[in-house]
Amino acid sequence: MADSSSRRLPLAVLSFGLGLAAILGAWGFQIFGGYAPCKLCLEQRIPYYLGLPVLLVAILLLLARKSEGFARALLVLAGLIFLAGLGLALYHAGVEWKFWLGPADCGGGLATTGNAGDLLAQIGKTKVVNCGEAALRVLGLSFAGWNAVVSAIIAAALLRAGLRRA
Image (cartoon, rainbow, N blue to C red; front, side, top):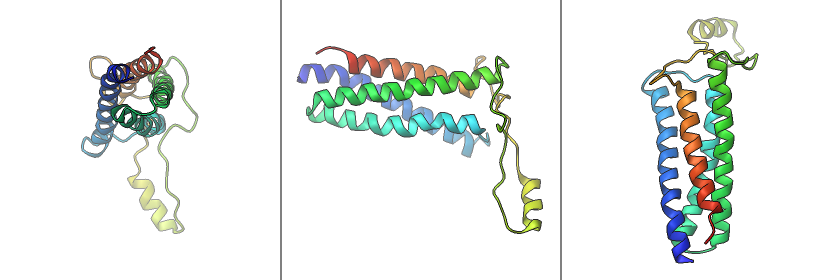
């Protein structure tokens, strides 16, 4: 059991580090870089918010060398969560490349207010973010494209670690 856990652990830890770096990078580009996320960008963060805690529990179980079967199930679950993230990222990248249409409501939103004067001021400050326009491309890939690459790597590593026989 220890031998099997020790082979799964590096893939799990590397996947966790890569996933954590990706979500922190998204937040960094938003907070420090001034890149406002669109609706699809925000949806692509959900697999990180779900998958990383699941993965952390699996890592802790592997480190404790307890419940390897449950740890393997959690690795597969986290892998499937990131596989769903890959689907979201590919969908968004396709919208950016105009392969298909994005959601009709994919733009900026306004918080509601009870005061008409506040509403006008808020409208003037609101930046509408279009899901179909890539805010930045690095080596030809947008944020969504890079998220697809990262999600694919994480999903493949976790599914391999979770499905690998002892």
